[in-house]
Image (cartoon, rainbow, N blue to C red; front, side):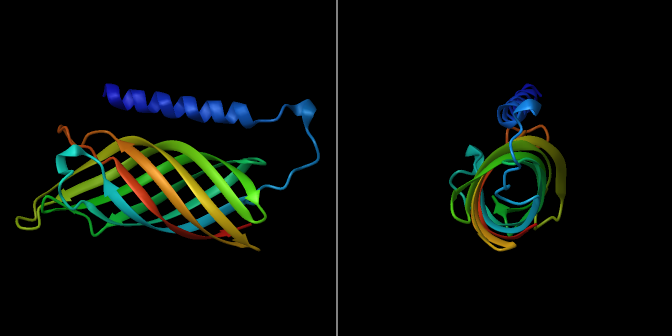
Amino acid sequence: MKRVMRIFLVVAFVFFSTMSMFSTPVNAIEPEQKAPLGTGNFALKLDYITFTDDEWSNVDDDGLYLGVEGYWKVDPNVYVGGEIGEAINVSILGDDISFIPVELNVKYATEIAPNIIADFGAGASFSYAEVTDPWSEESEDDWLFGGQVFGDLTYKIKSFSIGVNAKYQMTQDFKDSDVDLSNWRLGLQLGVVF
């Protein structure tokens, strides 16, 4: 439980530091700037996912992750939103893993070249995990608190976007074990900017 509290304190610190660092005082408002990712944006993601716990460092613990994300502008460069998805085709030590993270994130986006946007951010997550033994069909499930840091590189084509993303997500331990489902994700995204 101490680990979970530390994760939430770090995520809260990052969130409030980011919001205060990028907010504009009322008396310093300039003409409205163009938001790099529009007023809002949505994207479908196809990522490679691999779990990082030492328990299975020598086994095949990777698979695909399918997700959808949505963000809304709160400042010309700051966005708040979330993501939900599911890891598929993941098997660890012979057990099938179902992993569904639900995330709340804040990110900072900036245009680094015409129509090319880089963004980075952090957030908190509440993930559902189920481990099933394919032979006995017995399963255990748990909800795991966690947090993540991520970065994206997006190319805008009018109202559409295509890009790459990378994310590291930390989770608390599964049930009462020393095993966690912290993971790396790397992949592609296709979206809409409005």
